Length: 65
Image (cartoon, rainbow, N blue to C red):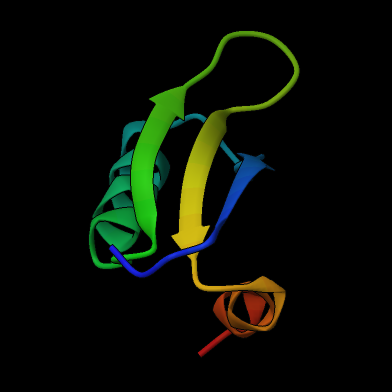
């Protein structure tokens, strides 16, 4: 896979309505770095497994488009 860093990122959404959740899921599907996405109960809304080459690549992933 050529990736050397796995980061688990907790995500909080602004709302729990269907449109917000569906928009988030659609956006995540377009991110090849996100290899897993879990709907959570409790502290956060989603947990993402992000796989990248290194810390610099993760920092680039974090930047908004």
